[in-house]
Length: 439
Image (cartoon, rainbow, N blue to C red):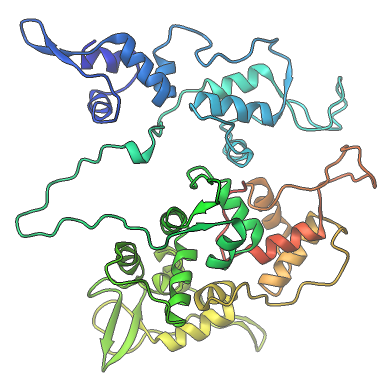
């Protein structure tokens, strides 16, 4: 097969095929014919794509069921767990994709809404949301515009330009620490809750645990890449405690580049005092630049003569370039109006506007109780019903512990959570707007 043949058969571009040729294990080609055209063995290409790029491989199969999904009747009822398993198979993964991922597809209408729901009056009666097999298969076999390759990163071939003469080659990513960690140690190191640390370990791409636990260096690298706020806060705590990283540790250098402001834009001097710009407010507190810029647009909110919320501090006067802010003024504003972000910045753990109410940890709370507890603890007022409903629909709050028709006692007629689940969620949040996908 030529490059053009491969691209045509597997619904890709020639640039895609040229990139595949740089990846480990892609079949070698050889020149053939009068024009010395590069060709490859068709069966080897097909096998490589089956193992590494399953979605493209499926496009090249002359079959209505390329992923080998189980046979059955179109109106058979299947569960969300079944769909997760089939989606994982279609993506070439060793196990199912997280249910949170598929729930996100439902909210974006990539996967159709359930065909059957509890209490819909149809037969047979169902006690959980279910889909017809034909609906599920239509989702799994859908046209996919993008496909992330499944090749392990450690085997990837990196093609970077050679350093110019006189330039030092890039430093390898040396581990910041050695040894092994368990989930409790991970939670302690990065000041997150135990449930959050456990959720990290179940996230795709998190280092695998060995006999002795998780490799500390690999965990550090994963957190640096995927949980920048926790990484930034951990570094600040280490600096405050005098536990700086050893000289020559390139992972510390990388972190410095991530946290330290860029020359000429991050922090500036005015009469010897450090100032912040709209572009660097976020970096100071471990949030995104966009979030920092949104803060600078916050205006005052009043109720009569009472000030409910102060506006973001006014810019310093006498600046000809981008607006600059006094760090002490910004600190005071963040401490008062973004307590979770301030707590992460100072490394003091979750900060609550109001203490969590007392009660039995096995009390059942409905979604509106959830909204009141979460809102009062983090904002000083209950969340709007529309807000908590949107969080639930997008998979940004934990799964309900009890659902209608689950057969347990006492009977419930809507989603309910144990008080313990709600409190663990509230205490695990690291900052305003920092919702992650459920795992």
